[in-house]
Amino acid sequence: MFTISEKTKKFITKEVSRYETKRSAIIPCLFELQKDNQGWISNDCIESLSQFMDIPSKDINEVFHFYTMFNKKSVGDFHIQVCCNISCHMNGGLDLFKVLSDEFKIEKNGVSKDSLAISKVECLGSCGTAPMMQVNEKYYENLTKDKAIQVIKDLIASKKTN
Ligand code: FES
Image (cartoon, rainbow, N blue to C red; front, side, top):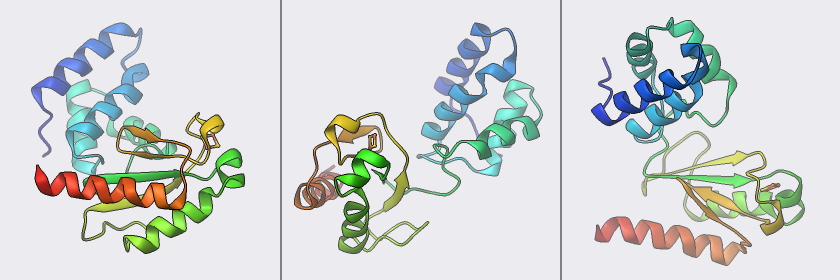
């Protein structure tokens, strides 16, 4: 069984107290749980959350499977989310996705040897700075192919020096 950290338990307890029904807190609690489990949520995580929140796991699973921002598989150390919605698409978002996938040998739904995963995502709300991508929590905007490749190289290098 997945062990929810004390920090996340405190967060969940506080979130639940903010709403009239516990179910209303499922989304923020799933986000926190995802951080607790290195960026993705397993069935074990859902079961632990279900027990802790005292909500049937099927109710949590409905929310979990509806939203694409909850990762169903490991996303490695760096989850690259390339926006391919209209503004980014018109400014080369799809090319960016392909270039990064090829350059860093990241397979669809896989994790590369550098611990990278990549996804095409819908609008991230930064259309004025298209094309853009999000890596873990951080936005990288006004990208060119070279700039995006350098961002990822720098992230990989920073991991090696830490
Ligand atoms: S279309 Fe890419 S951020 Fe909105």
